[in-house]
Length: 163
Ligand code: GDP
Ligand code: MG
Image (cartoon, rainbow, N blue to C red):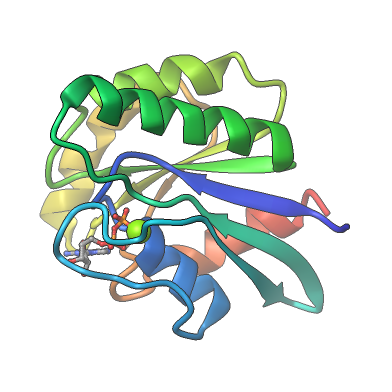
């Protein structure tokens, strides 16, 4: 029970880093290698006296691009069903990829709130580059550095405003 937020997006964008930060404890495995988080991770976050569940959707390892894309789409669809709101994470360092655009297409059809989080916005140059992500067409956009924690407070304010 309770309000649930799922973090979706392609591997290596920083989903588990944000998950850990929201929980402020090391439940997910973060690694430089894509797809290290094999399974979905569940945790509970607290912000200003409000509590909500967080799901970190795992990466997936496959030697076939088709299977890989299908698995990510499957994870997004499951998340859209079981969560009350979604964090769609992208990575400013790579820019918008085809897979990001695919996930965006799925999420735009959701009736649930979607927070587009552009991650790895570690400095002001990256903040300028990050404006390209407005092209994905989401109203609710956050620029974050999950590594430093910059921007996470505003995201938590917006999420908990829904509870
Ligand atoms: P996931 O596959 O989406 O769960 O991504 P991870 O959380 O495992 O992160 C993938 C890599 O990106 C790791 O090397 C992280 O340290 C790095 N990373 C995550 N967040 C940031 C960030 O805000 N800035 C930078 N520069 N690197 C980050
Ligand atoms: Mg992960």
